[in-house]
Image (tube, rainbow, N blue to C red; front, side, top):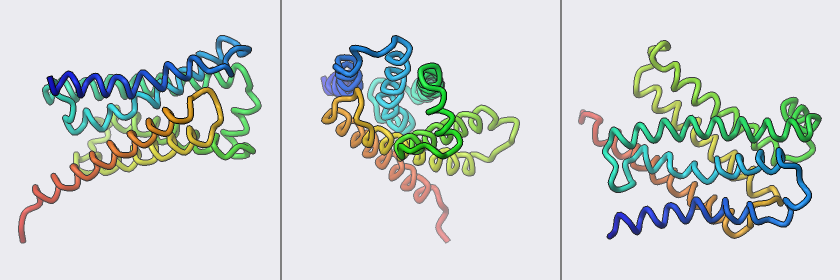
Amino acid sequence: MRSAAIWLWVAALIVVPVALSLASPLLQWRDPIYIAGGFAGVLAMALMPLQPLLATQALPGLSAFQGRKLHRLIGALLVTSVGFHVLGLWITSPPDVVDVLLLRSPTPFALWGLLAMGALFLSAGITALRGPLRLRWKLWRVVHLSLAALVITGTVVHALRIEGTMEPVSKALLSLWLVLVFAGALAKSTRSRAIARPKL
């Protein structure tokens, strides 16, 4: 019963912001590619809180192996969604995307989005190349958590500063949830390192 309640709560926190963004009146006169690109960005943000929850095995009913596998799958989906988000913006307004990439955008929220995207892509690349690069697990974890912090910070500021299709209250709650679950995962990781550290 408790497991079902947790999963229903998690599903609601993901689905509600996405559904409300799709019902936004601001989409009425937009091109389909713009709507799809915007939806991809909202979906990526909505899925992000799952990553720290899966990494710390906080979701019930999943084995450690299943959690790691789903964590990697959602990571790939995040990269794909963000890529499609940027592609949609590029197709509908190439000059705006160029301004962001050249760090001359007049809208600060776009630069926060660029920070989040860059950290996400870099994290995915380092994870994919962890074997060939022969990164030690402890070093990789520090880099992975640091980049995750940049992704989350950039995403939250990017979303909160945009007055767009996301409904304000659900967007704020999603942002708060994302920050809290990452902070919890970071605290748990710190505690596990302290426990594992040999006493002098």
